[in-house]
Amino acid sequence: MEKNAWNSYNDYDINLLNEICDDYRKFISNSKIEREVVANSISLIEEKGFVSLDEVISKNKNLLPGDKIYVNNRGKSLALFIIGDDDITEGMNILGAHVDSPRLDLKANALYEESDFAYFDTHYYGGIKKYQWLTLPLALHGVVVKKNGDVVQVVIGEEEGDPVVGITDLLPHLGQKQLKKEASEFIEGEKLDVLIGSMPLKGEEKDSVKKNILEILRNKYGIEEDDFLSAEIEVVPAGRARDFGLDRSMIMAYGQDDKVCAYTSLRAFLDAPRCERTICCILVDKEEIGSMGATGMQSSFFENAVLELCCLMGHSEPTAVSRCLTHSYMLSSDVNAAYDPLYCDVMDKRNSSYFNQGVVFCKYTGSRGKSGSNDANAEYVAKLRSIMDYHDVHFQISELGKVDAGGGGTIAYILANRNVNVIDCGVGVLSMHAPWEITAKSDIYEAYKCYLAFLKDA
Ligand code: MN
Ligand code: MN
Image 1 (cartoon, helix red, strand yellow):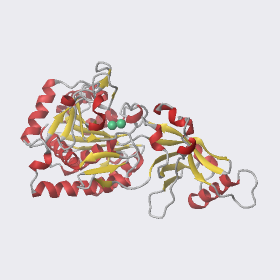
Image 2: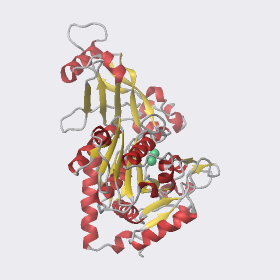
Image 3: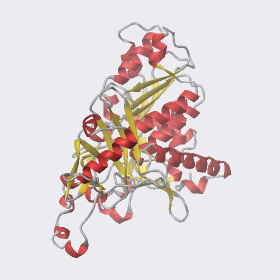
Image 4: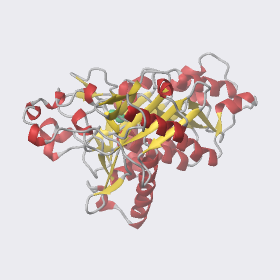
C-alpha cells in the first residue's frame, strides 16, 4: 500500500473524503463544547429513529435486534447502541471518544470591575499553554441555570456581527522583564481574565461598567449576577473551522482533540450497516481533567446503561454485564500527537504518527515507563491489523513522543479495567491542545473507514 494515503485515492475516495471533511468542519464549528456536541448529536440521531433508554423503560418495551437506543447523561455525555442479532452477552463493538476540550471556564464569582474595565475571572480547564490564549478573539458558550430551573443557553461571539471578548497582553516596548520569564509562568493562571467591557452605565458612580454589562445580560438573557453561581460558561476561540494549507489538505479548528474522533466515530456508527454484534458509540465528557465526575468515563453511567439493556433483553442474571464487557472490543477513539519536524527532538521517528499516513493506533500511552497506560494485548492488535488490511484502511502504530519526554492518557484504561479489549485509535494532530489545532483530511477519512470496518467486523 502507498505510504501517503493521497497516492492511493480514486475519484470515489476523493468525493467521499471531501463530503466528510466539509460536514466535519460544519459539525465542529457548531459544536465547540460538550453540551453542544451532545445536543447536536441527539437532533441528528432522533431523525434516524433512535429512542431514549428512559422512554423504552417507561413504556416497558423489550429490545429487539435492530433497535436504536440512546442514553443522554445530563446533556454532557451520550451512549448510543444499535442492538445486534447476536446475544448481547457475546459482547459489543464499542467506539468511545471524548467531547470536552481544553478551555477557560468562568469562575462562580466571575464578573468584576477594575480601572473602568469589566472582566470575567476564569479557571482554565485541561492542559493548556496559557500564553497561547492571549490576544485571541474569544467566544462564550454554555448555560446559565436560574433558581427556578430555567436553562438559558449562551453563545456570544460566533455569529457574523457578534462582539468577541479576549485577554490582553503587554506591548513589547514594555515587555523586557516579561520576556525573560519561563514560558510556563509567562502568564499566571489567575491572570487569564477576559476583558468584556468599558462603557459605564449612565448615572451610576460605583462599578458603573460592570453594572452596564449586567444591564446588557439582563436585557438579552434575563440573567442576574447571582445566576452566574449556577452557570457553566466556557471561553473558547471565536470563529469557524477552516481549510488549512494552500492545497486545502488539512483542517484548522478549535477542539479537534477529540471532536475529530467524536465526529468520525458518530458518523461511522450511523453509516454502519446492520451488524451481527451490538454496536455502541460513547461520547463522553471530562477526559481532559481525568474522566472524573458523573459525566466522565469513570462514572458508572455506561455500565448502568448496559445493565438496563441486558434486562430489557431478558437477561436478569447478575453475570450478564460482566460477560458482555469481557467479550467486547473497543477503540478508544482519541487523537495522537503527529510528527512535527519543527519539534523532532521530542519525537521518536520510527514510532511517531505522520500526517496523511492514516489512522493511528496507540498501543500504550502513559509516562515514565508506560505508567498508567492501557497496554493493548498483542492478540487484539493482530485482530485489528487483519480487519484494517481487509478493508484497505491506511493505519500506523505510534507512541506519544520519545521515552521520558512527557506523556498523557485517554479513556482507554477505564474500560480496559472493566475487562474490555481496548486500544487507542484516532487522528494525528499538530499543535494539540492549542486554541487552533490542525489535522489532515486524509487521516480523518481513514479514521472514518477504520471505525466503520471495526464496527462491522470486530
Ligand atoms: Mn484526547
Ligand atoms: Mn487532550
